[in-house]
Length: 80
Image 1 (spheres, rainbow, N blue to C red):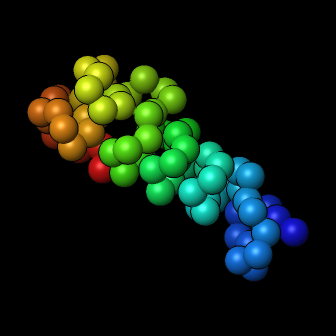
Image 2 (tube, rainbow, N blue to C red):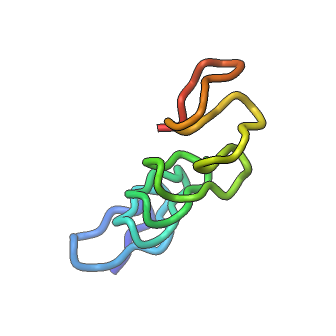
């Protein structure tokens, strides 16, 4: 069964555990995915589209966060 903190025994698929550590199939709270699904905080590996408008590939960043294909903006953070 799924755990509250998002930890599983490796057999159960997590839906959206509290830690947000996903197996790549569903969204997590932290948004750290393997690129197949969107993350809550917009952090992806560059393949998945972000949900909160930070940026996806080819879109303009609104708050200084970008993916690896775009130039750094205000805060210099890259979206990897």
